[in-house]
Length: 483
Image (cartoon, rainbow, N blue to C red):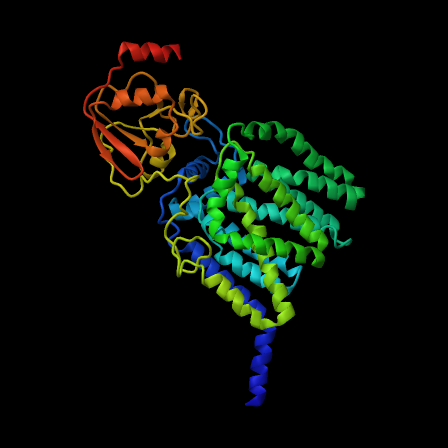
């Protein structure tokens, strides 16, 4: 009996870490896959889904208007491949789930560079941290970007630690960087670090520095166009802070973790933290506020917060695992459903993020027997069909319009109305997101074409059923022609 107990104890001690990793991974997969297809796609998700659908059907990211969608090409081809088997909200989001799980594995691998327990704790916190969970459940490329951003930095670090395979790590880091740059232009932040590491650690391969240098020259003009001029940093600070108010204590742990991590592994800590902080600072100069722009930072927030607990466990013993478990469970949605700290009870809804608006055409029964007009077409097109016409507007609210290409709606290829409508009854769906972006003249035109129509209000849009034919008055026609 004593021998059996000792064998069992020895087995548990030997395989405790692998067992924990598998259980954490399975629970993380459950949280990310549960009811994945239930929430309606938010507007950018619908764009990605339409692009991926075109790839699945034609092999190219060419929309019906003829516009070639060049953002995150690799990501959209991956989603397009999934659409060969099934076109649904679930499959649209599945690729992000895979990258979310890959990020957890990367958290474990990087954390293990500090200590084995650090890797396990980082993976555990990342598995249930609300930003990691929610952004792994979106049909958009931000989780893929997070994974590639920190994979590039980790491979760059590994290229400095082993002379035998340093070139392989360096080439892998450059490859990861190029895919990350295709995924989102923010990866350009990594280019100076690649150049610096190549010059300092890989002088023989100096010519490889020409790759990130070329990327800088190619992308900088585009980045400069994205820099905002009308929003103050204080406004952005308060906006982002509102999403982190319930996890502000993590910032304290994060700072303490950086200090301990620096003394434990200076090179790795410097390599991970400095580029992340630079990119986070750059987010405040973007032309628009969006939580997704800063979501990548949750990776290092989770990692270095976990290092604090790994230090306490190393100093005071495994009994400190209990405070870590309490740290995860007490503020979770088991007790505070919408506190957005950690998630243990699976969710079937989107993150309540005002910078990711939803137009829920999914859960309403809409009449499509007469011509249909919309403002933002991808959300309607994904759940129903191509609209017959679209009223032009700007997605940012700062231009005359940004959805017109070759005289058509850029996403659907539908006709863009300016002064007249079909000579038959029609339905027009005006979503609240797009209404907030209309210029005064566009708003006036919309008011004219919906005057006298039957109005039905839904949570995210207004449906106007117009049984008459609209004919623009001469005053509006002249004003539109002059514009």
